[in-house]
Picture 1 (tube, one colour):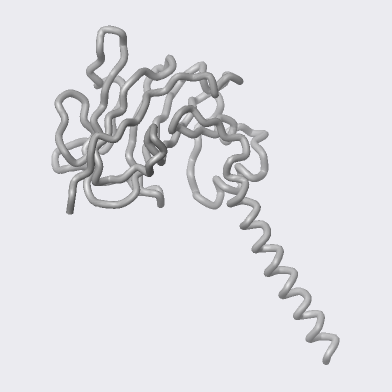
Picture 2 (spheres, rainbow, N blue to C red; picture 1 turned 60 degrees about the horizontal axis):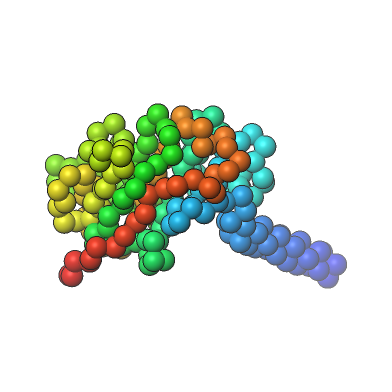
Length: 194
């Protein structure tokens, strides 16, 4: 009986430590294969058939669908250009250009992956085919609860904000020089009180 209890205890300890160490390894390896361009972070090879096992495990855990190498690349921003965390109640300006792409989309999410509800009567995302641009093809997008003239992505509520910039059908997705890309900056313009 004592031997059975010791074996059961050893198996329980091994399974617990094994599960904990696997979870820790997946969470600590979040930066494996990632590329940072200003405040934007991407894992260009996460959707590749030969992606590293940690990227596959992270995608399986989160349940996120990712773009394949030939489809495009997804950048996420959780901070602005100064390194401050993005907040739903704050107003930001995204200004600059993107690498060549057939189309891109900009979508605000919560940290758990839910689309942030826009203000009444406003779309929850923007796409490049309906943006107003400057003569040099650059653009400026206002993001936040307060209305902006021109391009505006309305958000509502309070709490953290994650911006997802997806470039579809772009040569940048297959490029080994993803880190040398130029992406728009994210500048804090102010936060509402309350």
